[in-house]
Amino acid sequence: MVKKDDYTQHISAQFNTELEDIRSNFLAMGGMVEKQVVDAITSLLEADSRLAEKVQAADKQINQMERQIDEELVRILARRQPAASDLRFIIAIGKSITDLERIGDEAAKVARYALALAEEGESPRGYVESRHIGNQVRAMVHDALDAFARFDADLAFRVMQDDSAIDTEYKTSLRALMTYMMEDPRSISRVLNVMWVLRSLERIGDHARNISEQLIFLVKGSDVRHTSYEEIERKLQQDN
Image (cartoon, rainbow, N blue to C red; front, top):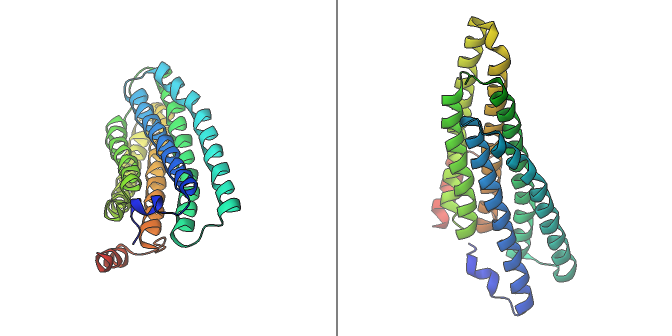
């Protein structure tokens, strides 16, 4: 099992610094993405057009952070030729920054729909569901990043479990909204925008789950993608 302190135990002090810098930059990118998610949901629920525009503008900075970290990873691979847990660290960060960037993309989409809905004025059906699912995925993103910061595989596993609950709520919400649209065809345009918001929120949950899978791979050395919860839990209990 790998612990956070293992990445400051190399003979080369420079290598220690390089790995810690990557970890710090990853968490900084994660913090910005988490704020983008929070702001996107707030802009939707409060019809705050200015905040929605701010979320969309921040997407470029997140893309730049992804490129910067990716370049740092490539340099370390070329110079250090890492092996074992160091290589898992590089792989896990490399895959996770892709998921962070995609969370940023989905937050920008939510902001775009928030702008459209704010222009239409009246709050449509689905805002209660948006608030509830939005709060859940925001917590998932926060916990996935917290798990990465603390190398906490158990917390990462809980994030994975939370994703299943969000998937179920998402499907239930879609069915309710589709029924409402059939009953009131005048609402179709507005409710469709809300449905796209819910779709983006559900995808944010998927990406938070992916980040959690990478953290478990980093800490435990186990690829838990496409693995049942029972099997993952058994693996975590064995290691503990």
